[in-house]
Image: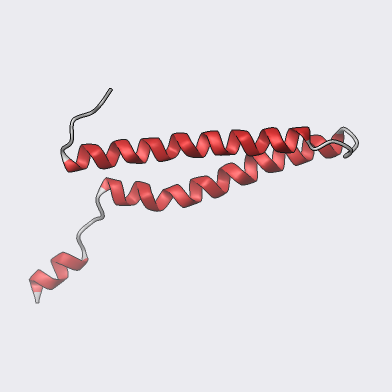
Length: 84
């Protein structure tokens, strides 16, 4: 019984924790960058969507960077050599 409790109480690996947080980081990036771009577009009259599109691009760039960080953590955990 004690062995079963130790398996349940085992803390998650850093890679799993980073992967779970990835979805929240993507959501936060979309809200901040796209929301900020929308806000700037509305302050400038609302006729153009330039800042909203820039916000989408920045959110995807930031999300890609976060995915790259998680991949590096997963590679370190699996024991593969770092390509950089």
